[in-house]
Image (cartoon, rainbow, N blue to C red; front, side):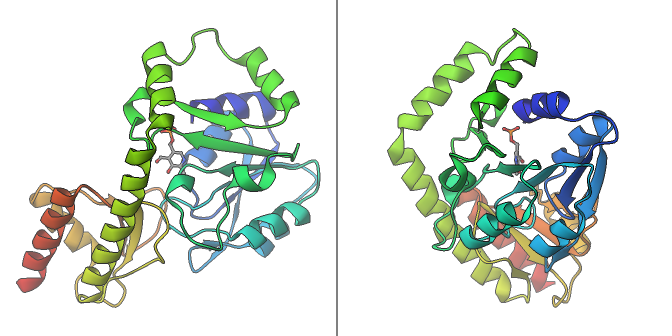
Length: 275
Ligand SMILES: Cc1ncc(COP(=O)(O)O)c(C=O)c1O
């Protein structure tokens, strides 16, 4: 995200317009606003990015379209075909920023990461992070992939104080640890399925499995998301409220944890519903 901020500083001027999907990861709007750009929200359909709604919002002033694929907190994603379609429908001089933060988790057949799809595109910039599957979030390290022109400009404005060496070394080592990565992917799919099915018993529905979290929908459940959140919090388990910031009502985001965490969560949920 630091790279992203750098990028926004370089690329955006006050009054430029950026388009972000309605429920997209919050930092895009925050960083864009800091540089005085106008943030335009594109409506979503069933918590999924809508290509036609993005295209509707394009004006002469549009500079960037930001999206995370899959998106946090909705867990929905644009398929390979849809992402290509979006790029085709956008004006050539509008930059598409694809945040691939959760790409490594994605085993869905209709999905392709931004990096896989747009390596040769001058008008796409890809964001990647070591904070998710690699588990190095406290080291604050990520990377970006874009045209030589963009990378050159980023290097001009980048401060000399680089990502620290420990973080760089850990990141390089983590890329070699294929065993850890494949174990994490299997663990995630196994527990995401287990928790998703478990919660269905209580009429809590969630998105099709994608990244390492689920968006829990309480609209059919006999208790409210807020109540569930508070009860879990009292038991030392914190889910992400989607009300503040995202303005998504009666839902919660649950991140798949370790085996112990997941079992603890399911036991706690059972006891809340028993009452
Ligand atoms: C979509 C998305 N992008 C980026 C980030 C943050 O990445 P980093 O830790 O590299 O700043 C997050 C973290 O929650 C995220 O959900």
